Length: 251
Ligand code: PGA
Figure 1 (cartoon, rainbow, N blue to C red):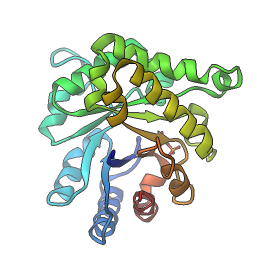
Figure 2: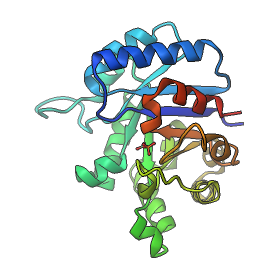
Figure 3: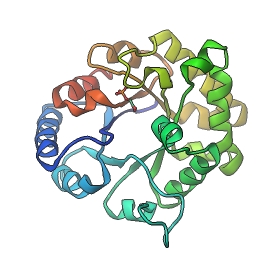
C-alpha cells in the first residue's frame, strides 16, 4: 500500500507576513488531524528558514522548488542540494514545467538535478507532463514517457525507488482546467506500466501524484483513483483552509 503525499508548491509568492499567516493556518489545520498523508510545503528559497523553524516539532515537511545540478562552486545565483539538506529540506521539485518552459531546462539537466538531490539524501519530485498541443496530436504518452526515460537512462530505474513522480499536464497548470480523473488515472497507469517493464517492485512502490488545478472540490475524486497517490498543488496551496481540505481528501 503506497502512502499518500500532498505537496504545496508556493511558486514565487508570499512575504514574511503572508507566510507567517499561512504557516499558522496550516499548523492549526494539521494539528486538528490529517491522517495517512505526508504533507509537504515548498516555499521560495529565502523563506526556507522561516518555514523550517515554524514547522519544527510538527508533521509538516519542508520541500524546495528547484536545485542546482552542481555540488558547489562558481554558479552565481544557484542553490546546491547540500545547502537544502542543511535546512532540513526533504523533497525537491525537479523539472517543473515552468522551469522547462520559461528557463529552458532540458531532460538532460533535469536528470542531473534528480541525481544531485538523491545523492544529497533528499527525495526528488520529478515533474512530467505534456502540452495541450502534444495532447491534441496524440503525443501525450510519448512525451511523458520520454521525460521519464531520460532519468532512467541517466540513473537506472532504481532512481525511482527514492523519488516521487508528479504528472502535471501543462495545460492544466494554473488554468482552473484540471485533467479529469479518467485522464489523470490513465496517464498514471501508463507511467507505472512503463516502470514495471524495468522493475515491477519499483513501479508498484513509487508515489505518482497529480498536479494541475487541484482544488478542495476536485481532490477527492482525483485521489480516489488507484494510481493517483496524492497531489502537487500550486494556487490552492496558498490558502491554508483549501490546502488542508485537499490533504484531508486522501482517504
Ligand atoms: P496549480 O499548479 O495547482 O496552480 O495548477 C500546480 C503546479 O504547478 O504544481
